[in-house]
Length: 76
Image (cartoon, rainbow, N blue to C red; front, side, top):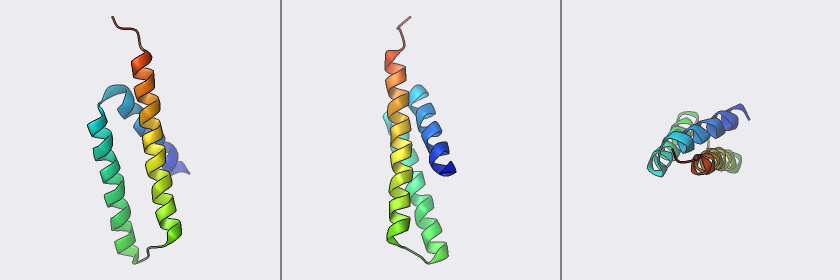
């Protein structure tokens, strides 16, 4: 759960200060690190896939919140 919270907050920061392509790259990094962890442990289970899905969902939800908050800021 702590990893999902960190990913959510990171996604929100990306949404506030960056563009969508950076969020895609960050999702790729999360996917690559998960694949490396699976390769090192030699264990690929349905639970691991669901955890990866939850982590990516947290990252994307944070990005959407950040992008929404950025769009609501008044233009100066």
